[in-house]
Image 1: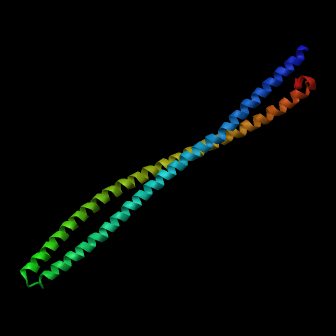
Image 2: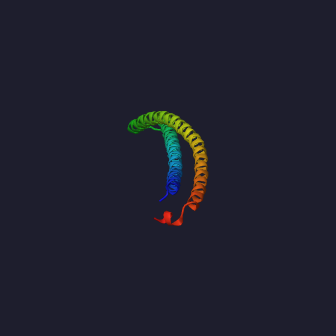
Image 3: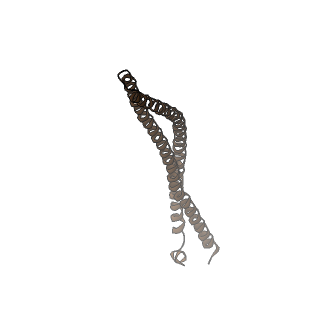
Length: 179
């Protein structure tokens, strides 16, 4: 086999290697973009979970506040009833009920204060999660744009090398390409 034909085959083989390498690089980009997208989705999920936790705490607080209002109403009714009672035993029983309602009121107030603290903390968590999401979305947009440009460049290079390979292959005898 003459030396120029060997050089032509070596050049063809080099073009094939470049095309394969470029195609491998191009295939790696979509999974990378998908991974970045899943990170953004994870940040969205974390934000939504934080919002839901905050909403649940606010709902629990409203329920406790409603319960507190009922207890206060009951205590007022019992207090007003004291003036109508004539018997000492009944008077003592109502006083005991009022004391129990006051204790329950105090416990509810403590629970509500604790819920306010938890709601405040949950609000801060929501803020942190929203900031993380904005950061991930910005990173994703920037990286996706860069990777799409890179993919486009790779596809153009693949097309160029494929055309060059076809030209190179036409210069080589058909019998040499098949062996």
